[in-house]
Image (tube, rainbow over all chains, first blue to last red; front, side, top):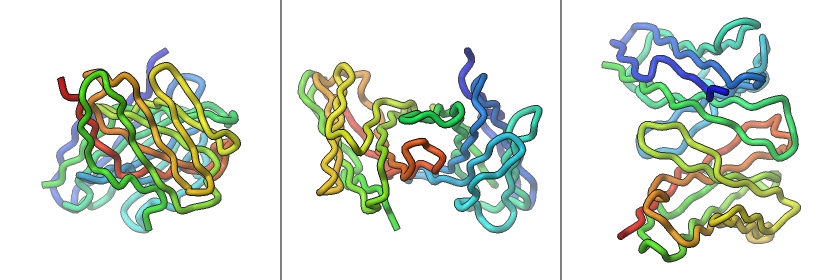
Length: 115
Length: 114
């Protein structure tokens, strides 16, 4: 059973370009979470999605950021018109349908560098 | 507003001794707590968790203690091994069925000394 897959592992973009980060959850997992980690910081929640639904996007910046988890295919975190402050490690996590005392399984992350 | 606080950015412990990592939280609605371990260039991996109805949970060398009245939890690793050198994140959520997001602390970097 493969773990959570994220690609690309490293992404370099120039200011103003778009960044697309992909996350394939573990098999059987229908919940996906995106987190951002800035240097020397903890992981900050961004968005929680189930198939075709955004459940909680309270951690998403109001502009330029969007996320989706379509019926088929990976979850996508999209950042439009990137700025230097978007440089960070972006982690995706997945979990099966809610079970008491469950935990999230994390992917290896995508390191975004904005030049 | 930091709801989950790990006040020690780093900790050094001799191999074979006990490592104690501390965590404080401010949100009294948190009812489920987790510890994650993270190596450089990898994603966090789940280590151990505890529900608010318990005050202790043990798994091998790892034990988590929860003091609800003090809003404090700690992770004990004994005996500490070189492979334990990593960043440890304390995390909490407000819904045991985990329909809610997990709030992470900033992490504590543990160095196990030979």
